[in-house]
Image (cartoon, rainbow, N blue to C red; front, side, top):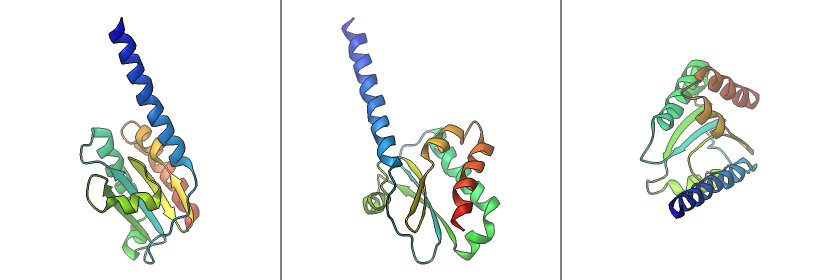
Length: 141
């Protein structure tokens, strides 16, 4: 009985941690993009990654190459994969207000957090993720 209560308590703590991080990530933040890119797409992750984590990065890159090939080539869109376990990643994560794994679209003072949608759709409905990325990026041009 004590084991099940302990397991339940740990489960509740873990869920609470993710809920707090999700709320914190939704806050609008003023960040600046590099002078060379109008729109920056950041994927923050850790070294140890699951299949879904890898799918988020792969599908995002595929969408950018499909829908925004010219903008990528011209440097108007930039995709950056950031390993949070590597030295030097903390400054960028802090600047973008990424407190963990995140898919963020940043342009000037605008910041769009697509983390929830990315993890929900990357493997099961990549077309829906494509739609969400398009909906977030198109208004920035």
